[in-house]
Image (cartoon, rainbow, N blue to C red; front, side, top):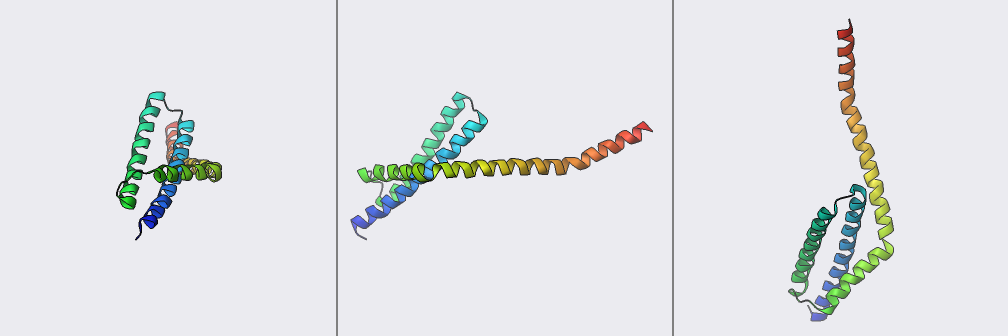
Length: 131
């Protein structure tokens, strides 16, 4: 394969990696907003996410061009981030919030289903004691 073809493939992989990085950031941003995490914990999570993303990009670079860091690497990541935030971010956050809401409602329903027999047994025990 030619050097240009390798660079184009790597560029495409980095655009995809930039989009995935932005998606992970959106998910983290939603959780941070919902859970109202303490600042110290946020700093540690930020560091962990950046380290994980650095490992992903490093692996892509190793696979794509033997780890060479060139201008197009940063350009590809920025293009991926920009494309995601321009066209996908609002929709993804809405979908993610909807999934979280459905999950919360489902967990609440399952909790009620499993606790209902216990409530019935408690009511029966109260009636038995009352006699």
